[in-house]
Length: 160
Image 1: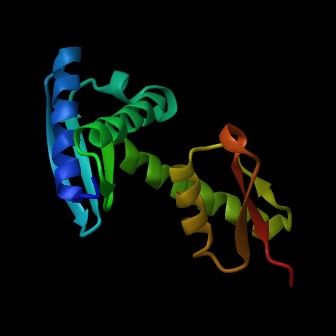
Image 2 (image 1 turned 90 degrees about the horizontal axis):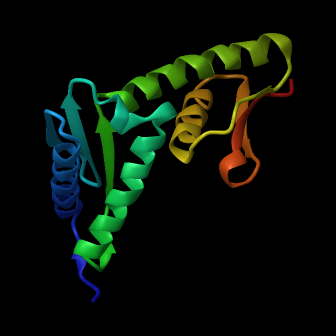
């Protein structure tokens, strides 16, 4: 099968999966789809006390994301266009904003001290936020180092 599966269809499958997951946990929550752009949709779960679905440092949310990808691939084999993100109770947005603030602070430290700032290992999505934020700041650049779960970002002051 070489059928192309639209991002809209993928988001619908993920929405249905998450509705079942929320019901299985006995939570009261709404599950909706937000079209970010032509290639990206975000399925959002909103309600009270959804921390168990986020987990420590977003680990459960990441696992749910991985499971949803498998559900989509099994439900609709073929080429999957675009990207479907998942957010629970606004966690990803808050995490993104906190990472942006943290990155700006570390970039300022790198600029004032002249010493590279090494961040803790983090997910690919979090590393992307750090790279994107730091690359908008004059005088610093970023690199990723390490392998797999130990992969981390280094904010490096530019040489004069």
